[in-house]
Amino acid sequence: MAEAFPKIKTIRYEGADSRNPLSFKHYNPDELVEGKSMRDHLRFASCFWHTMRGRGGEIFGMPTAVRPWDDFQESVETSIRRIDVFFELLEKLQIDYYCFHDRDVAPEGRTLNESNKILDRITKVLAKAQKNSGKKLLWGTACLFQHPRFMHGAATSPNLDAFVYAAAQVKKALEVTHELGGEGYVFWGGREGYFTLLNTDMKRELDHLGAFMHMAVDYKKKIGFKGPFYIEPKPKEPTKHQYDSDAATCLNFLRQYDLLDHFKLNIETNHAQIAQHTMQHDLETAIASNALGSIDANMGDWQLGWDTDQFPTDLYITAHVMLCVLKMGGFKTGGLNFDAKVRRESFEPDDLFHAHIAGMDTFARGLKIAARIRQDGRIADFLRQRYASWESDLGKKIEQGKSSFEELEPIALKMGEVKTNRSGRQEYLESLFNEFI
Ligand code: XUL
Ligand code: CO
Image 1 (cartoon, rainbow, N blue to C red):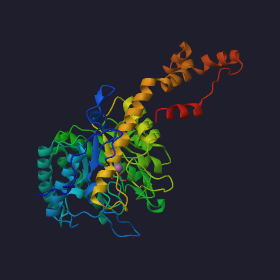
Image 2 (image 1 turned 135 degrees about the vertical axis):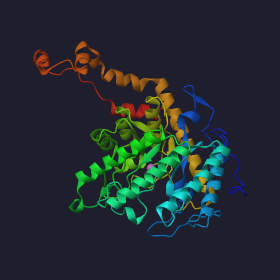
Image 3 (image 1 turned 90 degrees about the horizontal axis):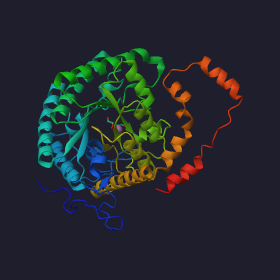
């Protein structure tokens, strides 16, 4: 089939001085950072939904995207053509992984049975494209939010029919993900939440969600799918309140329903921001429970309160993200999935390249910045010293859970007053961080 981007050759690393917009200035896939290639640190993925299905439409305006290969029909032929174009793009961008929802890659049929058959056909096309290119599936997922049948939710719908339909859809999406060698599987609860508590039995809905996840775990074991499940936190949009609001909320849900052994989190920058957190906050929360699995790499706009899904071009964010990733010892099954879309005004096909290059270069720099901060060691030293009092015998005893109020009271009475507080030096540390940007 003719190339969709005949004028664009494989994007290569040309170094920071290059003036070629279609080159990497910082992402040098085989360059070693802390003894590991950038490719293996970053594990970039592109997502099928924004990259291939995004058209730049919004409530005020019609789609703007020019996509000469696409007739924008829900047909099998067009779906197959899109897959060709997508793999050409992955190849030329040197991106090793991709992610998709079942309904991004394959149109729905008139019945679930027909939809499953179409998805089977498309799965064969994807398998062949993976084989020919060496590209891999980072994770798969099911779209349980677009169709009107899920208007009240999927696993948390008050309507049992919707729960049943969603179960069957996830069963199929799991099979397909497994068949394609997917390294993980994502649950994002777009409609698992509410608009008003007047019509919502929250406890019952959460119990249903717990039951749904247990069925998914049982089925994953049955088919031998070894990859982790990921929950992707988001506080709102489309619902007013989503049950998987942020990392801490998800962890609480997983603990309460005894699911923590089977799940990790897929943290998305823009979602953390809508939750009024920094990305770093949600990453640290996940890491503290050994539950950071994967990352949806994008960013929001601080002046807008919604999920703008912009390509990540903020060095502070990517440096903080990569500090967290290095701290946890790198990704295992996860990676950096660009859950990001080009702006409505960036409507030309080439913008898909500029956008991914921007994200990849910004993360490559983030990685190098993070590695330099670790090598320098001043921030780590500061942190060690800040908690140095806990290295005492008494501090260790408390940390091991072996002390008591009765033991501490006489010590406090003898001390009289807390004397040894030291400055937190926030401004110094922020400026020190800047040295590496
Ligand atoms: C929506 C979102 C989803 C998930 C996958 O905000 O991030 O695309 O990543 O369902
Ligand atoms: Co996402």
